[in-house]
Image 1: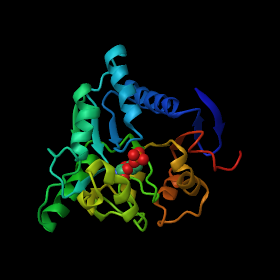
Image 2 (image 1 turned 180 degrees about the horizontal axis):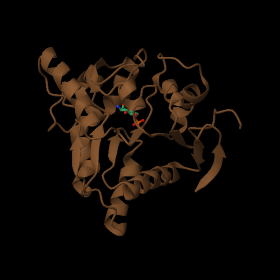
Image 3 (image 1 turned 120 degrees about the vertical axis):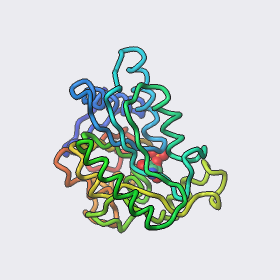
Image 4 (image 1 turned 60 degrees about the vertical axis):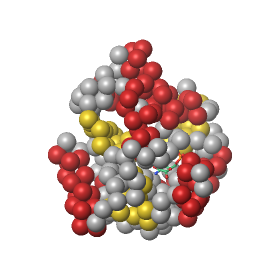
Length: 252
Ligand code: GLP
């Protein structure tokens, strides 16, 4: 249920569960209309409810993902896919082991030489392009304004690459890792240009803790210093918030 519709393609729902249902419906509509859809997926706590709803639709309504390909935004570096902290493991546990996904890819976080990383990042981009490009990219938003792991200062023309994590991002990740010193300092992330090439972008946020960065993302100056502000330029971006996350947005 959407309690209110604001301009600039913003949907505001009463709570997190409704945000997740709205986002999952959008993804399901795409997959039904285009069974071979290419999805760009995200990690973090925000999409968890979306994935739970997609799993429910798969089980109860037969939503078929067998021809879907997905590419995740990012992975910590260094990080082995089998680590419980990897985004690879997160996606497997919270979505892919519970639906009939066709093919899925997460950037490779294994420790290796720079040349190999550069090559693999290029291959990730090529694979997205060869699959036909992203039909829909799902995004959360970090407190630094990051999307994926594109931290402040990420160039508009950035592509999949090795990045350095902001301290705020590391602090936010620390509880999951059992302490700040356990959180990697780097990650492999799709770039801003990779994300902007998607035919559709769905950004979601919930909770009062995101209210300030949501306000800056939608109403602050457009700048690479707040990468989420760059998403506003996309011709087909839609923003899904709950009332807590949207509470600092100016009235329509
Ligand atoms: C991580 C992810 C981002 C995500 C962000 C917000 O940094 N790399 O893609 O958007 O966390 O996480 P949460 O949804 O838990 O607030």
